[in-house]
Image (cartoon, rainbow, N blue to C red):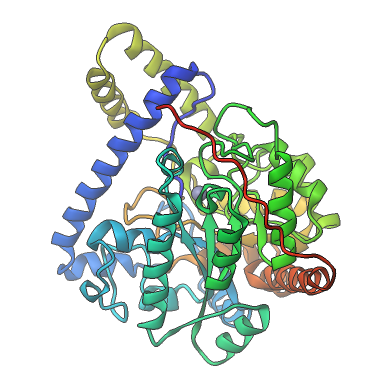
Length: 462
Ligand SMILES: [Zn+2]
């Protein structure tokens, strides 16, 4: 999940914290309003049709898709299998109906949710990592673990009550479930704050089915720096290194999306298994602080890891940095003119209405893939779209919902990618890394004892 869309780098620390809180609040309110509207529209056949839009013209209206390439892409994805490493549906269950799954018939299109079985089938998804996401602000109240368990609970109930889905715990499980015609489901914990500095919680998450943990989310944690917070630990602390090693022993990917470049480099230094970026793009194409710099991409072949690209507009469009610069200037101007948070929040909302952010396109996402292929190699690219809402403009144009994966692969075929390349990006690279990680874990478990030291929790004063 990625919910904040402005450049915090130029703001002072106090302003930054204040702005993050305000923007989080505003975003959540607007998102709920949107959900209310879409529930109202839910019965509209027109709306349902638009969700299934599969015209030969991409939704940005600029790129015609060759129907033959689209058919070829669909056939390859069915074979691959297509593995997506990031989708925030469990959070949507909790946000919309407090986790009451009887409100949803997942065998039908659910316009208020970011995924359902018919649309996942349309998108040719073979395996999905469901994100266990809890705001990193919960580390202040030490409620992260409690909230994480609510996420696991709703995600497990969802899988167990949906006949088309089956939980996978290994790479072999993914292959078996895919061959049986069901969608394989795994979990990724999006933020190390959720273990509350306890390797016992990490091991319990593994037993529940987590096969990756993103070391941080948007804020620093006690043992690792985030890409979107100020440098505090300058990478991993000693405790953080031990957590990564315990993840290696367990057989859980260290996911270095969201973390600072120093944390990425420290993780690559200490890990004994492949890492993943569950949803990250190339810094060279869109220089957002949470994108992957080239020196880290260059280290992927030696590590064996995979960078799974996301479709989120602000991490995709090369026009985004210039837009964020304009937005930061507008924000500074509002700070100079107004004294109250309310006036500033209203002011920036009005500015955003006048100045729509760049969407990015299927072609931009393919540019990220081209770049990662050039620097890291074809064996180190995957897909982690990060669908997390039902807004039609959160993602790159043409990739609005889970039905749209084949359009991206048709674009790659159009660029000369081979069938083998497509199979690798769609899922085989991930399966290779997962198998390698399982092998490392099996070896380490023979010689290493579980890490049982509990980390010290920081005292939060505000
Ligand atoms: Zn995220």
